[in-house]
Amino acid sequence: MKKIFRSLCGLILLMLLCGTVVALEINDNQDDVEHYIKEPSSREYVSSKPNLDVTKVFYDVDGGVVTLSLTVKGVIEDDNSITYYAEYESSDELYQFTYTNGNLNSQASEMVNGEKNLIGQATGGPTIDPANTIKATFNVVASGGSDGKLYGYAGEDFPGIGVNEYWVDNTEEIDDGPGNGTGDGTSNEDEGTSPTPSTPGFELITIIAACGITFILLRKKQYL
Image (tube, rainbow, N blue to C red):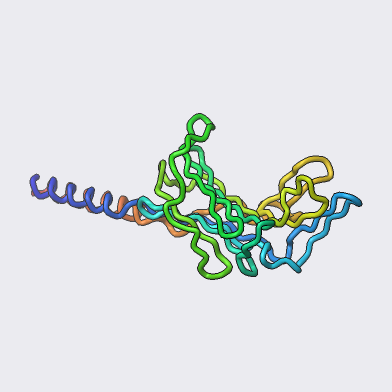
């Protein structure tokens, strides 16, 4: 019995050390930056803005650290008129950052009854590495699960308040008023905006192994 107890304690410790590992990503089409002119009204998709052409938004939680990143086809450009934005939101947590001209604004919030309870800001970042990816890291504020949604965009003079012309690439189709729809013009399913878990986290593998070993130990005890 003592051997079984010691084995169970060791397995529990192993599970705690492994921590939580979750990775989600969405992949966005290329050459789909929207060029929008209000007067006279026009909208077209262009390939001439690779620095705004979002290709991937990535979310990762490993142990107590969350990594949130956004990748473009070209390079991350430092300009006061250009903004890069990424967020991950679930039922109990929100991580987001806005990057403009070398400045990072970020927040990590616990979601309580649908309301944001600000916990802190990014603990690391912005990191531009490689040149087409901006990355920020946070301390986990809630469960760090995979039940949430990723979203990101890159825009020049977006959202276009007070300007007649702007460019933007969203990872999903959004509607900002009659005649002002912005997005990629394709369905969310085509964009892959419903994040899917990557290879199961180590914590799941550990739990399965623990259950299996415990079952074997208990079976042996029955025949002693």
